[in-house]
Length: 489
Ligand code: HEM
Image (cartoon, rainbow, N blue to C red):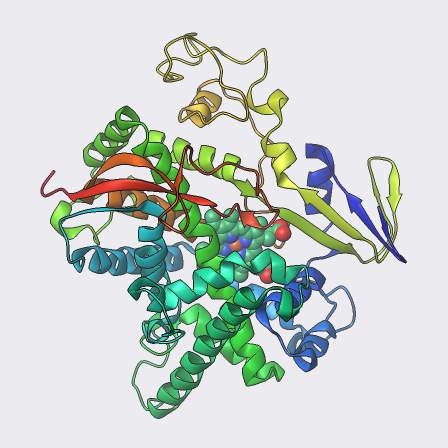
C-alpha cells in the first residue's frame, strides 16, 4: 500500500510477525507512540519534537551515538521493567488493586441491583485501578455538571467518553466533527493536569518525609508514576506534556483491563454451569483464604494456578483483542523474501493470527473425548472442536493436554519483542482477581443485553463488527444482570 511518498506494509503469518518481534533494532516503535501521544493525548508540539530527537531505541544498547541521559525511551522502558515486571512489584500492585476493589465493593449502597455489568466495572474497577496507579485524588476531577446523570459526574464517566472517541481522535478528526469526543478528551486531560499540579505541590511539601521512596503514596500513587514523572522532568518535558503522558498511562491500564474483565464475566454470566465451575474452582483453590468477608486479601499464587479460569482468560484474550503491531523501518528489512524499504510503516494485525482455523481448530486436533484431551470437555458433549470464531472455555486446557505449542506470532495479545507490553503480568493478575472477586461476592442472574446507553435493548451481546485495531476491542453493548450479594462461601 502506498500513502503518497510513504509506504505501509501489512504483515501476515506467524513467521513474519515473529520476524518483526526479532527485528527490534531495525524497527522503531517510538514513532507510533509519538503519533498517538500527539493526536489522542494532546502532547504539545514542542515536547513531541524533543522526544523525537531520541532515535536510539528502547533496548539497553543504543542504536546510535546517543548518551545515556539523552536516551529518554530507554530510560522510560527501564522504569516500566522495574515497576511492572519484577515479581515483588507485580504482587504489590495486585494486592493494592484487590484491596481498593474490595473497598469499592464493600461501599455499594445495595445488596441487590439490576445493572449493566460493564457499566458496573467501568465505575468500580476503573476507580480501583486508577487509585492503584495514580492515587485517589484524580477521581475528584473531570466532572461535567451540565445535564449529567450522577454516574457521569464521576471521573470515570468522562474517561469512558474519551475512550469511546479514541480511534476517531487518532484518525485526526477535526474538533467540529467530533465535539463530544474532543470535549471528553479535554476534560480528562484537564483532570489529569489538576491531579498532577496537586500531586507535585503535595510531594514537594513532604520532602522531609523519612521514607522518600515508598512503593505507593497518596500523591503520585504507584512509584512507577513518580519515577516516570521525574524522568520526564529531567528530560525537559513541559507540565502539559507530562500530563498528556500520564493520561496515556491511565488509558493503557483501564482501556484494556476493564473491557477484558467484562468479556470474561459475560461468558460466565451467560453460562450458569461454567460460572458454577469457576466459582467452585476459586473456592477449592483457596484464592480468598479469609473468605468472602475479606476479598481484598487475595492469594495470587492460588489465583494464577486455577486451570479453568486461566483457560477462559486466555480464550477471551484471543477472541477479544485486536492489536495493531505497528513499527517504522529504520533501515531496509527483508521479510519473507521481500525487501521492505527504510522509513516505511509496518502493520501486523493480531486478529488474523488469533482467528486462524489451522492453528486454533485444526482438523487433526485431539478430540475432547480422546486420551490426550482427557478431562477436557467442549461443553456440548459431542466431541466437536469449536472453530476459531467460537468461544470455548477449555480451548487452552485442550492445547495443554495435547502438548500443542502455540507460536508467539500466532498469539500475541500483548505484542512482542523488546517493547512487549510491560504491564502484561499485572494486567492478567488484575483481571483474574477482579473476576474472582465479582463472582465470589455476587450472584449474577443474566437478564439480557442492552446498548451502551443502558436503555435500548439488544438481542445479542457484543460482536466483533467494531474490531478496531486498538487493543482490547471496545464493547458496543452491555449485559444486564441481576447482581445479588452473596455472604459466606
Ligand atoms: C489486557 C490488558 C492489556 C493489553 C491487551 C495490552 C497490550 C499492549 C500492547 C499490544 C502494547 C504494544 C506492544 C507492541 O507493539 O509490541 C502495549 C504497550 C504498553 N503497555 Fe499494555 N496492555 C494491557 C495492559 C496494560 C497495563 C495494565 C499496563 C500498565 C500497568 C500497560 C502498560 C503498557 C505500557 C507502558 C506500554 C508501552 C511499552 C513501552 O513503551 O516500552 N498495559 N500494551
